Image (cartoon, rainbow, N blue to C red; front, side, top):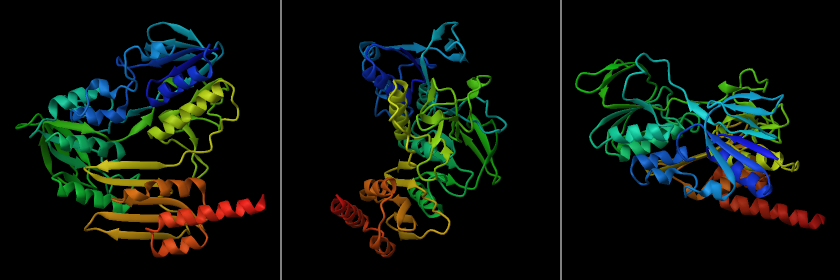
Length: 423
């Protein structure tokens, strides 16, 4: 059996290793299009502030790790897929045959259509090469502009602020982390950042970039302000890497469409991670969830299905984000924005940067947002993912949202007791 995994990020690496464990005699090839050992993008901010060396970003330690595990690693780019002949063509000219193919090509950064985005000194913090360039410029006292305060932008914000640079953040939406936080939580994160010396402009766009006079770059803002900076980091969004699939006949939406076995419309081609558009646990609809826990879950399920374990069913990914912004921990789960007609409970202490918001559908907790309250993270996820019927505990949570652990124990123990009676 010949397995090819395209994409050397977390999903690709976990899938290749899982395939090797499940089929010791199979040929497993992992293809990545960067001239680096497989690494984690999530580790790049730690590299920026010198908490780790480049080797610390590597997903697996040791130059011979993959060889020792019987996985062939190729640093090349897939240029074409021939489904009829079950072959992939590489940019180098090499053609590889496969029995099962996994596409784990991840996402790519999207540059906003702003004049001047091609000037020197503007980078996305997406590759190790980007991180090298940013690290060389984001020095103490340097003026840095960060475009975008979404999840990825806020991870980069943490590193840039710790570098000692004078940091300004511009976000076009009305709050920070707009796809993860509601207005209350998003603006509390903004207040937190500003209290720590980071300038944050929400509801603001960069309209153009030119060469500066006192500094290399000058950014024009929609507010009329002009910022001269030494470095611009763009974190304005990503899109799944599906462009190379044109003409293959593989079905795509926002990403590569997959069924509950991680298969595409070709039963011998699978997809996992940021590039895959699969079932959303909360809505039942298809979506792309570009977070590492989902990538790892996808990878393991895909590998099991590639070796014929048809019982490995994707039950849907839970929308889950946990973020550390300059020491303030925030999280959101499931339908954090709520469901039409559903009840909600909220606890707010602006002065202490504490916030908890619960969203219900009937007796079931379907979404949650928390800020500065890390003790509830595991319970929130558990209640949402198990769709536990809270019964009387829902009313108690509406009165006091902090009683989550009591609600979890009370509801789950009651379920266990009732189930025992039915045996």
